[in-house]
Length: 191
Image (spheres, rainbow, N blue to C red):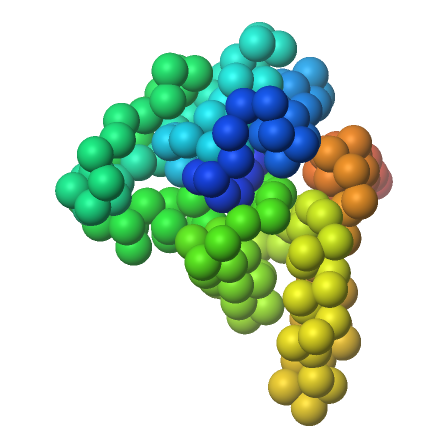
């Protein structure tokens, strides 16, 4: 079974922008590493990740929402091979956060922030099993550092986050996690 990596990001970046190119590279690297890429399925970095993964021969999942399409007439981007459509934005969000074997968060706005925060919270309390969770770019490091107060966020919960400076380091974090997990489980079952 192919592992699915959810990638969260903004709908704003346009083709030709640095953010779009970075997201496209994330998709390509995930596909080359053998992962399926799941995004919110629409425009901006969601399209870029989908395009990068598809062009590299990877499987692309778009998790869409009728509620979003009522708010703003859209359809899944053309790179989506498998569309999973929910009526509500809430169900779409929960799917993207829970139905994966790892997550990468690209820079983004309010929607991306809500995805990142829900994923972090679910990891913190064990709602989802431990999995790689990479935050790509300075926006996240700076934002979390400004937000962090030790009386509210324990160090071990801060350690759930992996800050990635580049698409390569974000995807390498996912690969390393699963290679280490596979080696550990082989030792356990053979020992």
